[in-house]
Image (cartoon, rainbow, N blue to C red; front, side, top):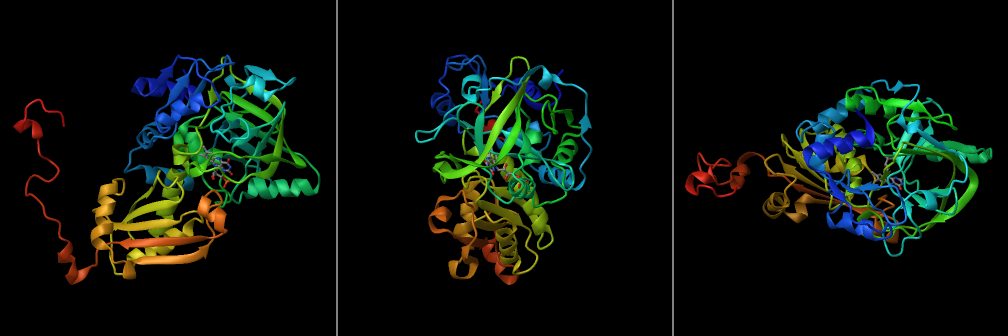
Length: 454
Ligand SMILES: Cc1cc2nc3c(=O)[nH]c(=O)nc-3n(C[C@H](O)[C@H](O)[C@H](O)COP(=O)(O)O)c2cc1C
């Protein structure tokens, strides 16, 4: 029985009745993505017939918050503590001698476009893009394995090139050192993983010293099973679908983009590092993993940031929950509930949240009686608890997200926080909510209208 990675995920989704199977032929150019986008990337879909290829494609796997909780065995209430606990208490992974990923090993005539059903998503995309690939390198100082999702534009033959944003010491700085010595950097791209592996990958490198494979083992409650790669000195999950092994080539760049990405805009077009794929390992009957760019599939990134933001704010205020919203690309907007103890707590939370991550642009701080996952509830707080001249904080000209259009257009980002908490003390009575005694949230409507659906 499969216990880790994509096939275990597909079995679980099938048991839950959450896997949609498409047996109609779809074109990997535009059509497959259009079907995923119809469901806003929240529905896992297995496309069994992909035009021009024998390999099925799966997408929409990790874009639904509730499903994500189920796949990582947690609940909305517990998840932040579970994720923080795994970050604080990493557990060893396990190296095994063999695994299904080694069932097929290809070292010759590698032609990515011909061999893999890599989808093209948008009109102006420069090519097809591998969007869910987990790039693996070895961290130089600790020897840990470093992983992060990076997108790869497919060029001719065995050449793909990577977008590497952010500040990744394990990758960016290490590669810069290798380039000075004109040395290739060994790497691998893993496809066909599970929600736990993805979540662990999304911890930022700034948390230096963390071994993401060990965070994965802590999250899954059992060791992540790894095998050695065929041609590079790296370890990869034994149960993954496919691994592309090779090197980042020193001092060579290919233009990457355009690519329809975060918030549905085309991002920057720039020369980016090139990977030469030298070996492909794959399971028998492999399934190609795709993530339609770049909507809800960033959820995993947001989920980890929620835990990190919670931990950062815990030292300042009595934080209750954090929602990094899908509408803000799972990066730019945070809604945070607190139990306000002192006047000023709302503003402190704003300062903490805007300072914690460069790409958080707007934050709203609410009291704990507000449902931060319900737009109506948040808007209610904005409408009735905010006076702009007193409650809005604007920080002009900060560093923002390089993936956000208005930042790219201007080069800096204005950050804004809204304190939508009620005042404490004698003015609190203005905010008393009207209730119906004995019935708040618990009326049994079928008692009055038998058979009526709730
Ligand atoms: C589906 C998906 C696609 C992503 N694509 C990219 C990408 O193309 N380039 C990039 O630098 N980060 C991308 N990310 C974000 C990184 O994987 C993430 O920020 C990670 O935490 C970076 O790790 P690091 O800080 O250790 O380098 C993507 C994340 C997800 C979930």
